[in-house]
Image (cartoon, rainbow, N blue to C red; front, side):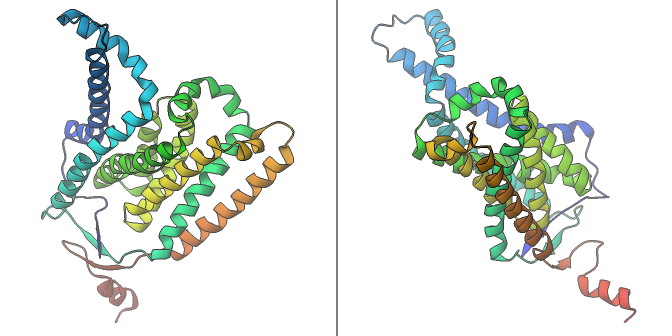
Length: 315
């Protein structure tokens, strides 16, 4: 069974508390990122044999080196995720405990069909390829590429195993805990699904820090929130996100696959785009039409599914 809570008509949360609840998971991630970066910069300073330490010089050198340590961005990102995930899981579990209180109306649903989670992985892979190809073919990628170059240099450095672990696995888990497990679900306490999907997608886009990734992240953010709402399981958007990030790493680091993007291969480019678009449509249709976990009970003022049927048919 899966417990889910949507909009709470009786729940009164002050506006400042709502705002704080939406932003502090993100701020915790950013704070841990800064702490790990400066600790590593401090370590580099203190282990430099040519450095003459004083209080002022240590601080100055640490701040100066904080830019240079991004050469180790993937390694630092892995550490940041490993430090952040346990905290996010704690907050996520505290939210679930809070939802068991009497002022929440909690719905109980069956688990989504296991094969639906396979669809989530395929959905992420196809959506990522289609969206990237649309951005490239429309010219948006060329116009905004400069804003993305610094991020791409940090993420993709040829260390494929580390990229697969950090970018492909740990980053999706971390971001889904923040943006769907905490932020989206808290928005749902005070909003219907559609505004929550749009608002959480905007926050997800702003988080990525540049316009090109922002456009990509906004569209993906809506898809991720939709599959979370549909399945009531955080595993679903995690798998979509993992699929999207893994295929991005493989496409970026594979010279053979990169040939699809080069000039002179437009027919191949469009063929791949069309094939992935067809795959996405099929997968999304199967997901939308077949993944419908049944509500099996509710507590609070709501009624059970059996009572709803009795009222509907007058039995």
